[in-house]
Length: 424
Image 1 (cartoon, rainbow, N blue to C red):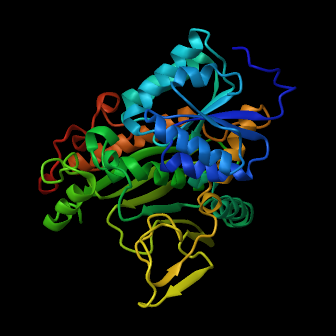
Image 2 (image 1 turned 30 degrees about the vertical axis):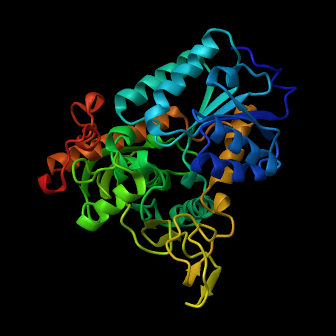
Image 3 (image 1 turned 180 degrees about the horizontal axis):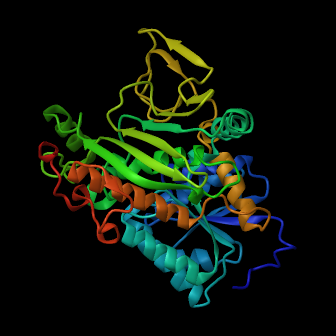
């Protein structure tokens, strides 16, 4: 596929966003630290939201972005060289299909497509997306920000260079993502999102533990999943008061009396390494965490060393007494739960969570300056692990990976058939 400009002559990448919500705005904050790209366009099914997001990009001085009436129009614009897919899970397949149709019908060309997590809601959807992107022959990147978090990158490199080189490879990785619940109604609806907190957030954690256990520069396939044990539960949001609270906040479409999703999930993955070791990854995620706000954490342990990371160990804290009055907001950190007391502050969340490094990397990939660290193939592998975890939780036992029927499996939560009391 021909590019809009000769790749050796092009020094900057024109980026278009599909989606205009919370995640897109995080990426826009991150693009302030990307020197060789400009945000040129935004499409959203809500044109007012697209216009607002485009105006934000202009305010941030990251490009002369404008709203587009359709994905096809976005692809056709000669200023757009690459797309960042940040829309809801249930729109992923149709958005990719519209991109493919526009490209194959000759409406435009692209240098690359980057897609937010998870790649899809099921293995069947993810495999379909991978087939489409490979049919195009366009470069692709899987947007997993936590792998690119500065503390993770530095800790991973140093532990392998110093600890593993001297004492042997690491054998246990842990990762967790926890907060008090999503922003938008579709996240809470299993049939739209594809599940509950396991699908929403464990996509981060299962990839992060595998990454930490993988030698820098080696393929993720050198650390192969062989067994999966998982558990899901509703700890908070199916209690009577909180069911009503969800309905008050998000409307009748979110009915946790009839169609709940899990708000807690844990998974243990046994991996076999190419150098003959068994290593373990533990992942935990929660929408029932009550604390300062979003907490990301990870650990990596080896024979004579360890590392730990916790985003709430921010280095900056503020205290407000009861006399201080203010509106609820998220000016201190994502999913902020309080306005008074002693609270951590994350001064640059886009950097701390890995968005800056991630976006810088994939811009350079699409400009032909680097090889991608994560592709849609890695996104497909993540979906396979998530679906195996759901199967394990539903069956109440450890499963050999990949379990039977994985390609056709749809979680009970996504089907609206799961009830907490029916867990085994």
